[in-house]
Amino acid sequence: MLRAFTTFLLLFINLYAINPTVEELSWPNGISFLNFLENNKMPLSLFYELSSEDKELAAEIIAGTKYQILKDKDQNTIQVLVPVSDELQLHIFRDKKDNFSLEFIPISYQSYDKVVNISIQKSLSEDLFDYTGSASLGIAIRQIFKGEDIDFKKLQKGDRIVVVYNQKIRMGKPFNTPEIYAAMIETRNKRYTMYKFEDKFYDKNGKKNDKFLLVRPLLNARITSPFTTKRFHPILQRYRAHLGVDYGAPRGTPIRSAGDGTVKFVGTKSGYGKVVIIKHAGGYETLYAHVNGFAKGLKTGQSVKQGALIAYVGSSGLSTGPHLHFGLYQSNKPINPESALKTVKSVTNAKEMAKFKGVVSSNDALIKKAIAQGETDKKFEFFPNIIEF
Ligand SMILES: [Zn+2]
Picture 1 (tube, rainbow, N blue to C red):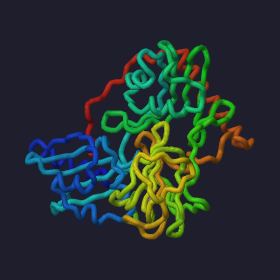
Picture 2 (spheres, rainbow, N blue to C red):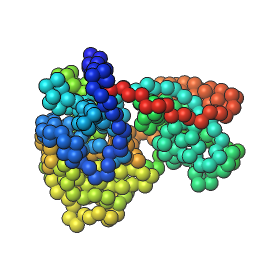
Picture 3 (cartoon, protein in one colour):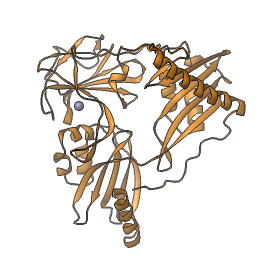
Picture 4 (tube, helix red, strand yellow):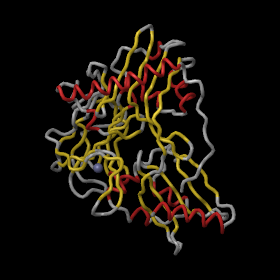
């Protein structure tokens, strides 16, 4: 229905207005959602009228995010689409009465299962980009093999990489980090393969060798709101996303750093209130929001150990009661913090193992077939921009 309406709207504009233009822009560094509304002459009430969860989401727009803005011939904004997670986007549009409205809607995209087989010529990331069009595939591959003994700096020309993955395409371009099902790297005559099983990666024996593992920032944490990139709320009848985990705890409960790292930010961030951000090895960052206060003397640039006291639980910013909002990011992409906790290290139970073996054999077959067929010969081509407002 909604899609039909927006398609109709675009059609209407095409037929009756002269030259509406769609621009694709990058979200600038240091711009808040309020600044954005101001700069585009849209009412600030669009932000103020959001629920506290949605204000959190609006605070999550990451610099560099590609968004689309549709303007009429007088350069007045008609529609804006800004992705806020893998699945959800913020849609601002002018209704029939010429008032602006804001809603969160699912992102429309196509998705394709693919297998890429290439021999390294320039570097892992560059070659993967050339053949897949995805800039984040290389980063994701490095993360997956981090626990293995592969020295990515020593990969040589002619070393092989095969990736079985799913790529989303939005408006003719690869969109978001691909979902990797399995990946094989062959270097110095040795093959390393990792398989995805229930959101984690394991070697063929079901073992996990992950060096970056978090501890929960609160002892006795109780989850009050889980991580989700898109969920339809049956009572509110709308979509929402929550790009972190909320833990309920009394005000003043000590918050510990989830891992070793360096303090990147101590201060206030609109919807999140008082916030600490810690940078970890491998492009990871953790965010602790709505805190009541910071550990004495905590400052930017300081290094912290896993488990070190950094702040206290509170309800600063837009928060309905004392809780900790805990976020985990990998190269700026929000991931579920609960998936990186120091818990499961291998597939142990027999029933799970049987399922895992199935995953291994189906992916092995795909990798074998890709190798037999020879290298992926075609480099990725970007399609012209197809607008799907
Ligand atoms: Zn939260």
